[in-house]
Length: 406
Image (cartoon, rainbow, N blue to C red; front, side, top):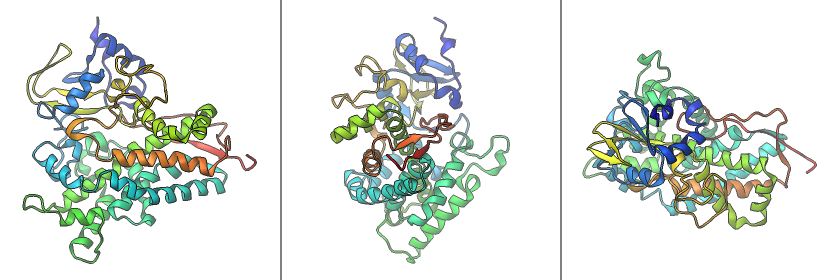
């Protein structure tokens, strides 16, 4: 077997988003492929789950960044942290990111999605990604953080623009001009200034709320307070992670609009809506893979891993592992499936998993309340394009027409 045929550019969305057949062949022929020098891709469920769970052997060091990119310590995202810092922060944040938070935010989520869909309906259509699904996670997470609803549209546009640059992988807006800075202040000064003002207002006592930013300002972690840079980075981390939920909602909306049978099945049996949310997460995971770094010698599927090697946890491939999921390469509504890996596993299981599931479910429920069967249709000239991001999977736009006569 020529393993070179399983090579691909990890930072090229044209490749990472369109390799379902290649992933299936990996699972069958080369469970730990080597897409590039020093990188090893786990394509099977058990191997991928093992890497997620063994954080001592497989570190989060380097996060989702390209090789050689160094991020200031106070600006690390949670997915780039190891012990002892990560469990300390996670313990603090779990006080907020839990099923209770999701339940408490549901009424706001319902009302906000209703407003967005009603506006779309009133003007006869539009881009349901930009006008609905991109705004919902930011608004809901922003509501928890303490961001006014009036700021969400502008923040959404700023995040959307930033995530279309090289910043996610390289920490800069443009690889050809790296002097703009690798920190958030250098790469996204408007966002940095916005959150610094929020933090300063709470430190000074000008704003006294029980929001998540206030809780982080007041937090004491073994005698230490969180720096402004740390709080700012975590706030941006939580909001940027919302792009994954944007993809979840967009993927569900596309499937509902494109397939009358799928939409009818969920309308006829609303109990299947949460099942559909999880199946969307499994079948078309909003995040295709994550990175880990080997700290010790290890062996995965007869492949030797050396310290410093980068592990690419193939979430998208693992979620279609035929040895784990029945009819794995089909979208099915099967509530008895094993747990998918869309949220990871182990100590870094996504903090926002309860919120994402709630937002996906409410987005579908509100769509059915607002629109009659067949009332929302794709524009005749619409062409499906994925978000141009190497890690993400979801449509960049969903241009729809809302029929008044339905």
